[in-house]
Length: 284
Image (cartoon, rainbow, N blue to C red; front, side, top):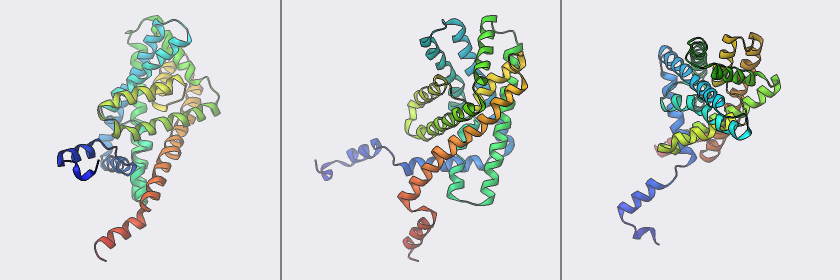
């Protein structure tokens, strides 16, 4: 069919149904990152604290499922679905999660490589990470001491905490790289999904749990519960926290943000060429 034979309404429908190019997704996330960098630290902190509080529902849901199901491989795959609960609450509720921010604020930095932008990225990371960690500490303590859960469920929570610190430091780090990669890819995909965003969140976060990858904030809820109840010690917590933190950052930055930036720079010629195109369009 000749495109000229389409009506205006049909042409508009075709444009609406077309998938956006990578550049559109890139610009959408870059603008969102710019907004986040402009937010006041207090606003970021309270949103991050709420996110940390919410992430404990991954531990709770997994523990409840684990206590109710038999100890089989298929049951482990079902239990891994519970891991998605905290992420659904955080992401759909637009709360600040540290690993999401390994991608979003970096795109403005890659587009405008200035010291003041780098300082704002560092400030955002610090405020959000501290807020997330404080939230998981409070929420996991409440789970541990509130008496709201059965002994079987509490035993399941403790086992989840022990599982998080079981791998060696090197394995924790490498598992965290893949988890950071998956989370950053999820951020990249969400602008495409619209009403199907919950499905994308469930599938990708289920993969993190099913593959026993390490996520610094969700895992902090698990390990802090173990710390409060004596299932693990401070050394175990440090063994989990530091390599997971750095691994998530490496995964988010190296495998997604850098690749995405390279793709857009190749397609559109980078910042210098962009300025030249704008200058040419203005006739100068």
